[in-house]
Image (cartoon, rainbow, N blue to C red; front, top):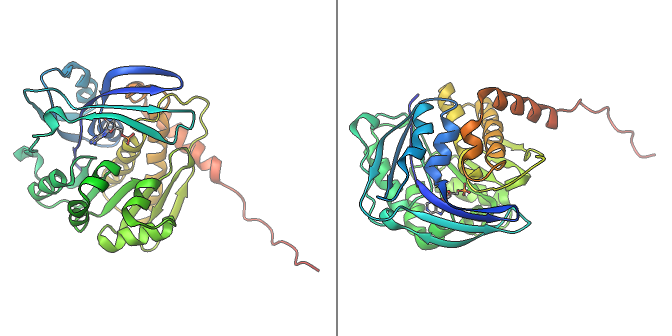
Length: 309
Ligand code: AMP
């Protein structure tokens, strides 16, 4: 059940209506691993620069994340900065500084090449394809992307999707990629490219799963406090793929539960800035929240309504 993730390991500068943090630990692979490590052993492949505070990754190691694939290159670490206004569902990227990421050529350590579960975090689709070719026989390949790559590397992304089983994107990305406003049409359009499973995340409004047989929806968890939505998508992906890897199966029932576990992990991620909440999170808290998700959506079969006279 080894789960391999390749993605960004970053220093984020984030501003929300509730405060500002600079050069805080972030990156798609970091959030993903922090969430997925609750479910199974994780192997992380990424790159950091000479200025990266590597000690901050130690909490991942303690959780069973193998960092042997994190390369330390000379040059500056990848940095991203963004700002949110009161509508925390949308953000503006202020700056993306690729640094060592620009020349990154992921080399998957020999010991990681037999991974059965693979998550291609949000990085250049050219690199995502390169990684895919180095993993021998993955059982399930899940992938994330964003507007930056949909606009800059569209053809390469479409070529990659032929080899992907699960695409996880937010609603704006699904619409931009497909050119379809209707999310069902967008999901069907994406499925025709390759991924039989499409998960569309809608921020605080939940997430929808589309497979050829099933459409399933989980709401966003109604939180008392939201500080920083950064990384919610990657934490969702970590919960979703981690749950599937732990159970070793991709049946419709497992996929539905995976959406709920993903939603639970995403909801924790936003409770504090950066990865802080995922650092002190416990398995019991995850179980409790999943139970609350059940209560949120459970209802009795209604009695038939009376016909209009
Ligand atoms: P999310 O909020 O789940 O979409 O992910 C946020 C994380 O993605 C942040 O921690 C950033 O460091 C990282 N990120 C932002 N832009 C990029 C990019 N172009 N490539 C890779 N990672 C990125």
